[in-house]
Every structure is written in structure tokens, then in C-alpha cells.
Length: 425
Image (tube, rainbow, N blue to C red; front, side, top):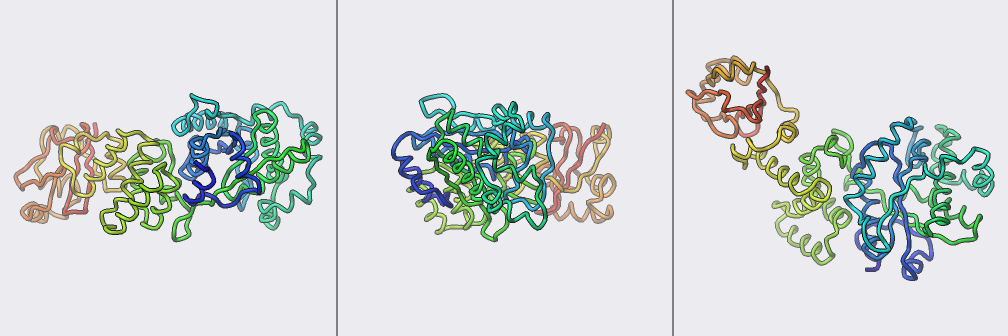
């Protein structure tokens, strides 16, 4: 596989240095992507860089994922309008370990000369003295050169600290270190990293006379121009504790047709012909959303596993009216709460539920689903009330057997109005 041609077809190339293609054709090339551990989880914005490394490895080259334990202590000004908050060393070490565990899901670290590696720039920066860094690195690049970078120019009016100003030197030294110690000749990243990447290449040229290369991918946005991967809840994270598998699955399922045609090329490893055929089929029947379903399935399984994917699909069917009472009783509590996040919730003593509550009392007494007992009876006669996805008559009661996970009752009025009742001890 021609690595750059594959990336071009997938819409994953923004720019690359002259000679990059020849280098990749000449020999197995070691390349790296840097990720600063500013949180203890990657988000789906990081997935683009991870997919760059994955395609590189599939093309027979060697990927290195660099965790920025040192650069994370400074903060990259690229694409930022204000100074980052500095994290403590303890926070950074915790974040590094969490990110390492997530990377193991995507790259092959086990076999062959091109097996992936994870490195941490804190390992070679921690013993660097300030004077040593000035002599070894700072001397080789002029202030004029550094000021010309977009990441610096864009901050001159609002202000940039010396700490962030020197970030490009630290990242440049990372490239130099990997070039000298790992024979790394290619650095990749988002288009906002071009200035940092070229600084590293220039530092290597001036210090060693060596030639290295850089490649960037576009910053992914949605068709409406808004930032990719942002929802009302914030970033879409890879860690299930921050973004549940259900919400993760729903994010991809709810992408527009235009965005999904781009994303399925970027975020899956599906071959070209299969993607082309899938897009063509989708265009014939877009209402079936087969393109979105395929994308959501592929990436949810890779990030969270098949069981979490199947649970997310079943949970989705429950919410949109196709699920059964049996399925509802099987889903875990976390998934139930994720699916019905934001719906009104009422709390009722568990002992009251165990004793049995008639439906009129439940609707108009224990909750405020109905404004009065008369309205509750009318709803029940019309057949508009369901308990745990099953319609109930006026004479029905709820008791301990009605509880999901021994704690919840799902109450539904009509097709779209949901309520959760929680039994409290």
C-alpha cells in the first residue's frame, strides 16, 4: 500500500514536505505523532492522529506514539487563543498511563520490525538543565525564526508567555532525540502542528545536517464548520467513564450524510471499494442510515468492544420504540441512565413499591405525570401509559417485580414522554 496515496484518498493529507514520498518508498521509515497528556483520556479528535499511525503501520512502516510528559508541563500554544492551565506532575503521570492503555487498542505492539512503540519525552527531558537546553537547542534557532510561526504570531496581540513561546523548541528537540536514537525520519500531526514540525526538522538540519520530513492532516470539522467531536456534553471521549458507549455510538449514528461520507474514510480501515459501494447504496436509501450504522458499529467496537456495541444498539432500540420489556430488564444500570439522561425522575420509597402501588396513585399521587386522578384515569383508558415498555390498564399495579435493576421503573406517556421512577431505601 502506498501510504500517502491512501491518505490522500481518505482526505487525510493537508501538507507534507518535499521528499516525503521518496523517503517512504526508499525504506521502512520510522514516524511519530505526539500527544500531550492534558487529560486522562483521549477524545475522538485524537483518533485522526492514531489512524495516521495505523495506516503507516499497515503500509509496512514503524509507528511511534510519543506521550508528551514534558511538553504537557508547558502547554502547546498552537490553535489556542489563551494560556493553558499548567497541570501538576502527579496529574500528568496519571494521564500518561491512561493514554498508554488506550493506545494499545489501536496499534500492533507485538510483532515484526515495524511493531509500534510508545515513548515519553519526559524520560529525556527530566535531566536537561536550563543552561544545557539553551546551549544544545536554543543556540541553533533564532528568535526571528520562532516569531514567524503562526502559533506565535497569532498570540502577539493577546500575549504569549515565555513558557509557551519555547514550546516549539522542546517539541523540536523531541524530533532530534528520536532521529538520533530511533532513526525517526517523519513527524506527523494535525495541520496546526506544521510550525512545530518544521522547527524540529530545521533543528535536525542545523545540528546534524540530516534530512527529515513532516506530514500533516486537516483539522476535522463538521460540514457546518463547527468543531468536530463537540457535543452539548463537551468532547466525545474514548474513556467510557466520560462518554458512555451508548453516547459514543449515538454520536456517530447522528452524523449528517455529508460528514459520514468523510468520516467513514478517516476513522475506519474499510477498503476503498467497500466504502464506495456502501456510499452508493446509502445514496439510494439515505433514510435507512446504513452509512451511519456501519461507521458507528466499526468505531464503537474498536474503542469499546463488541458487547458494549451490542448493548448500545439494544439501548437505542428501547429509546426509539422497538425494544422489548425483556431487553429493558437486561441492560446495565449505567446504560439505562445514559439512555434516559435528562428525563424527569421521581423517587419513591422502596417499601411503598414493595407493597404495591395502583396506577392512578402512581401517576397522580407518587409522581406528577398526571395533574389529577381524573386525568390519570383518562390516560389509562386511552392506553397512553406504558410501564417498562408495556401498556398497562387502569387496574394494574406496580410492585417489586416491576423494578429494573431492582431500582427503576420506566414510565412512558404516549410515544415520546419518558419518566424514571427510582426506588429509594
